[in-house]
Every structure is written in C-alpha cells, then in structure tokens.
Image (tube, rainbow, N blue to C red; front, side, top):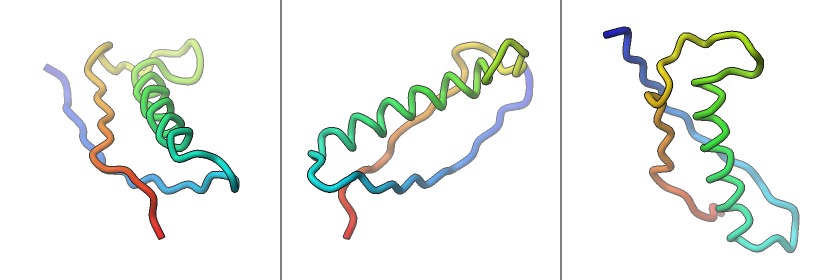
Length: 66
C-alpha cells in the first residue's frame, strides 16, 4: 500500500448576475469531478502515480453566502 494523502479545500466563487442557483450548483459539481480526474490523471500524458479510482472529492456543504 502506498502513501494515503488528505487535504481540505474551501471553494468560493461568484456567478454573474441573473444566473440561477442551480447553475452554480452544477458548476461546483462539474468542477469537483474534474478535480478528481486531474488528481488521478493529471493535465497531460505524464503519470501522476496516483492509483486510479482512489481519489475522492466530496462536496460536504454548499449554498448561497451573504
């Protein structure tokens, strides 16, 4: 078994005016999926040496902030 690694991130972003909240939620979900892929595969053809299927990106909370 290799090294297990954990990190905690907070993500805040602002949508343009007039955009529905469901679009913000979808953007966050799509970004989490892409982040997982980036950890496992990387930006190019080089190996990240991360075992496929081991990266987990979980959205623990979300919602509009003041």
